[in-house]
Image (cartoon, rainbow, N blue to C red; front, side):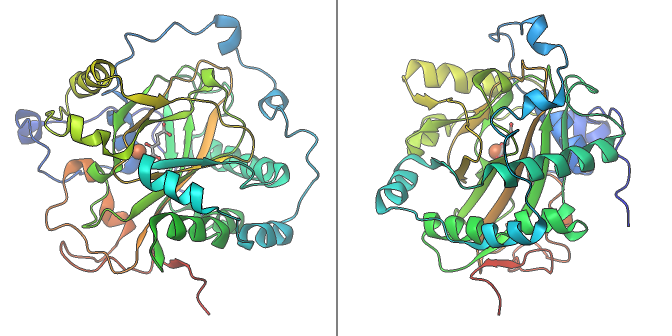
Length: 346
Ligand SMILES: O=C(O)CCC(=O)C(=O)O
Ligand SMILES: [Fe+2]
């Protein structure tokens, strides 16, 4: 089975009744790519420096993988071994995640695995959108999901016991299920990702939810690394702000509150192999991609086994029925698309 081609450009269709309502109570009626196209319009880019034209010019793909070029070739069998080996997490790292809501862990992936992941994701995203990454499409945020069902290399990365055990141990729960995979490319020239926390997005009636954000190349500051406001409870400072589905006002207000309250933000780069984990309540955003290459990232979201679907998912929950097919609001979220990823099934 091949993936359906994605639309070259889809603008958010907030028509009719939806356009008249300022709340977000109705379900999202389009696909996940349309969701991202809409969502990126909510980011305020007025404070962003214009990217240097020479940086934004497309560059040979090889330069993307700075630090990866020397990586030895690695095959899928070795990848499976690497991706099922537990990562030695220290008690301090667990404490730090729980206090701050996120953690960036070095060397979760080897350079060879990172390079293989990028090659596969560039191919799959390029095919799905009929484009060439690293300069073929400017300014968009491309997203594909459920690739693990069809592609064995993606399956190894998405169902990785190494990554899922990190998710379970950081959350402090015995078993985690997959909510979804998300293959993302923030294309050269694409603006910021708006401030948000994922509790807003996932239609799950639990906060035991964590996303492993797995870069497929190093991410320097001007490529738009994910950035995190900390500690975890800064979300309380912005709890009362009204979300707007029409403009950048929510993102702008959050920026203002964080500045006024001098909230700490970690917006440092990601070195090759580094993976971050962010909790459902962690406020995060990402910078614009002012580089000439695609910022390719795999984001796998896991939740505690036993969690239920919310009674009333909203449009900010996006295309959630695609990820938990057949689950009614209020039911336990455990469809065939939500395998237990830790512990490994016998
Ligand atoms: O990659 C990005 O810019 C945003 C990703 C994100 O918000 C997430 O994975 O939760
Ligand atoms: Fe997010």
